[in-house]
Image 1: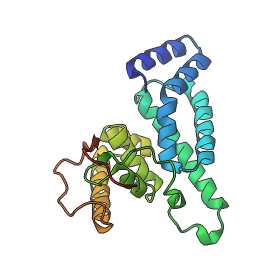
Image 2: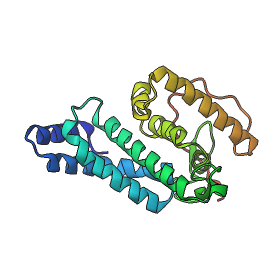
Image 3: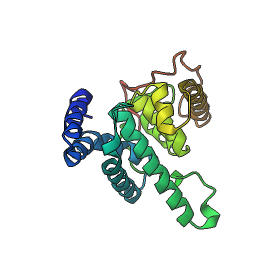
Image 4: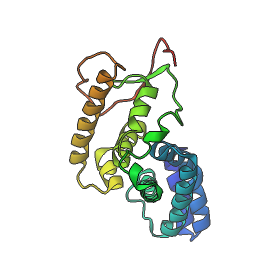
Length: 215
C-alpha cells in the first residue's frame, strides 16, 4: 500500500466533500494490490480471485459512505476482502460434486500462484514456497490469520475484528497453536530440521537466505 496516512487523508477529504466516487477510487488504488495479494493466497484460482475482488470493490462503494475511520482503513478493507473470499469459497464448495467437498478448499491449487523464491525463508517453517504450500492446506480463517499477522503485521485486536472473532488475546493464542502445528508438519515432511520454535512467534517475517534450494 502507498502511504497509509496520505491515503487516509485523501479518502477523508473526499468523504467530507460528499465525493464517494473519489473516495472509492482512492481506496481501490491504494489498497487494491494488497487485497489482490491476500485473495490470491486465500483462493488460489484466478477466476475466483477476480470474482472476489469484483465483489469486494462493489462493497467498498456501498459501505464507504458510512465509514468513519474506525478501525483504520487497511483493517476495514481486509474485513471486506475476507467476507468476499469467504463467499467465493462457499459458492465454490456448493458447486463442487458432493464427493469432493470434504477436501480442504484450495488444496488442488497447491502448485499455483507461488510468488516467493527459494532464496527466502519464513522461520520456523522453512523455505517461503514450502510455507506457502502449507498455507494452502489451511482453512480460510487460518490462512487469513497468518496473512494478517505475518504479511500485514496487524495487531491482535485488528485481526480479531477482521475475522469477527472477539478478543485479540484469543487470536494470539490461536496463532501460536497454528504456527506450532505447521512447524511440526514441516519437520514431519522433512522441510526443516527438528529444532525448537523461537520464543517470540508474534514477529515472524520473511528473511533472505545465503543459499538457494533446488526447485
